[in-house]
Image (tube, rainbow over all chains, first blue to last red; front, side, top):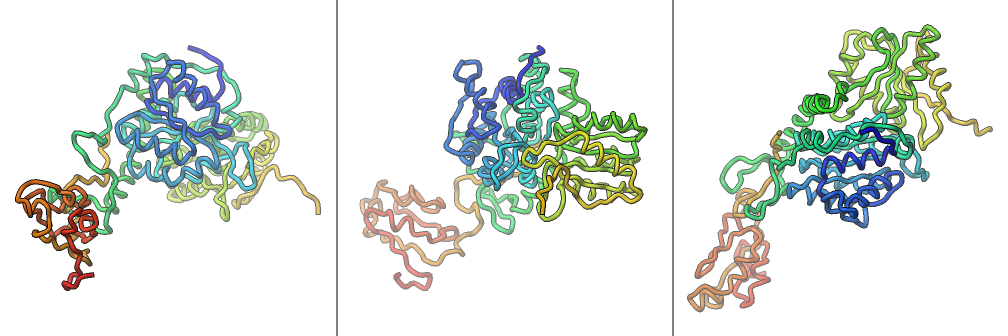
Length: 399
Length: 94
């Protein structure tokens, strides 16, 4: 069914269709309307879920961890400093291998205080062990939210669905709301591989010693290193599972087919712009105008950032001579984090492209299409393009 | 579906290995004071209930498995008859 809704409501409708059983959240801009919508669904009896209002994001994640440990399908959403406040429990949920789904409505981090969009919040959670998916538009928000539950439950790893605050969360676009019977077929009810059962009491995620130990049955139990190694292997295997999830969804809805990288006019491109989220769609306009000038350019966005799709990246950029990575995030003291990952993955190729980095739109600074075009144009034309990160859109504060 | 490898503990002695070597203080049960021992029938068992390592038996008299007892002293603290004393491993009273 085609509807017109906000990005936040697209995510809420995805959670409704996925039949989440426990929702715990704390309000924070720009995520708030998402969980408000879910509380409306629950209050109106449209959703058979326990909605638990909590006093902080740390508690929201703690409730989701507890719910998921009993086998319930649990969901939360947050942004920016709320996500940071949750961080300790975010790491725990991943290590505990709980199939949670969380929407992160991307917003810049304080200080200085900002409520507007960039990607610094989810980037700070890059190494927590969560799977991170990024959405470019409203259709991807609802589809990715539904698919995230399937992926999380397949691999027993929590999944973060990231989308741009305001630019997507508060704008309205038409998209297809998949019918309930389609989503039910895609995402049946599930029982996790391990969960708490009063009939068979166990303690989960108990203390490990530096060395592996015998359990009470005299069997060798995994120590910290074995458990983390197994987690890492399962995260790497999640790339194939994500592809399988995408194919399964595509069969039922007709949408998908680019689970790792979504490319636009890259087939014969010498230079490709790379970005996460809605910025990649803004860059399509830039690509069209530069193509009209005769430059062989394209744009690509990553649908999954962790686990990093390094094989797909090498395949996608094997014939590219130059890459320009536009980022709304910064590894402070170095460069954009996506740029670093791309440099590392592509350095293994025989003919690695020259990679440049542009920092844009921090704290919601307007990203002007003409500035993007001028940067990409100069990067294409330069004899030796600079590879150090430079910032777009800085204002001159005078002397 | 991937079955994750996580750390799971079931109730019972020995889940963290032979933890008796961790012990600094050793519990000594005085059967002349202990309620079930004195009465010669099942009673009390507060020590059995409170032991976080499950190393005290629900028997008359209760026995403490020193292979796994970490010497935390909770049994001595909780015993209503004060029948359990904590002594150092060299045998001195604290």
